[in-house]
Amino acid sequence: MSSYSALPSFDELPSFKDFTGCAWEVWGKDDQLGTVNLLTEEVVKEASKEIKTGRAIGLNWPVNFPAKPAFSRKPPTHEVHFHSAFGAVQDDLLHINTQSGTQWDGLKHFGLLHHGLFYQGTPASFFKTGEIQITDPTNVDPELIKFGIHNWAQHGICGRGVLLDLVKYYTELHGKLPYDPITTHAIPLEDILACAAKQGVTFRRGDILILRVGFMLRFNGATAEERNALGEKPETFAGIEQSENMKRFLWDNHFAAIASDQPALERWPPPEGVIHLHSTILGLWGMPIGEFFDLEALSKHCAETGRYTFFFSSWPLNVLGGVASPPNAAAYF
Image (tube, rainbow, N blue to C red; front, side, top):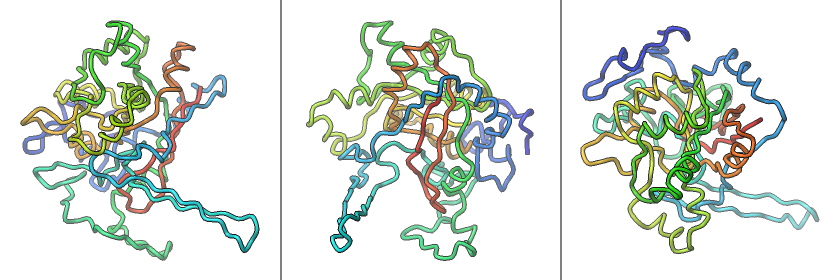
């Protein structure tokens, strides 16, 4: 187990079979937080100094969207019920796939596909599937809920957020985006570094890295046919490249989490024969992956103020054993 001040570099991490950079031993064999361990009380306290004006900006797309989700996920449904017997009382029912819209991918979502393993080398067969019933809060089987999203929900994903506005960077450089966010395109590491340099951003251990790649802007300006096609055609999206240098960058900066406005953080699908970056980020490191974050208001405020760092707060749904969750995220300036 490594101390906070003595984390190994990417090149110092052991390999696991055909994967480089395995962090299963970094926080101990029983760890269920992954890189959220980096969000210590000291890190959160230091990050709180980013709050200077009190301006708060939500980063959550309404759970109603997209109405036709990608990856064959169930569309969200919302029902409002009026209790006429009481004169003025209403309830509502909300049914969502926790990954149909703005989300954190949790440790039970994506692993090492061709090995059938999740974080900490946990076999896929370990997890109970189907309906999970837990009725006694004083008698919860820890094995039933192991690696669930509740671990992050009870800890919080709060610290210093850093926005890299690649849409602004590319548009100023080329006059327009040099790619369509809803087609397969890889964002290279050198562009991420160039964007950070142009914004005057440097990174700290425990930062939450947030990338604006352009999906929200594209979706808001799309036709109804294009929006509906999101849930009907094979998935193709722009996202970060699946390279060893990208892994090295993400690990060696010791980000606590990474998120973007894209439906998939990484280029989708990966090139033929290339392993998904999700497998490394979630399966080997235990790093939260945020997707579908609504960064439009945030990017506007950052551009207006010249501030691309802020206090970031996220409290996922406290679902025992949950796979993923809406982030309930906000940026504070």
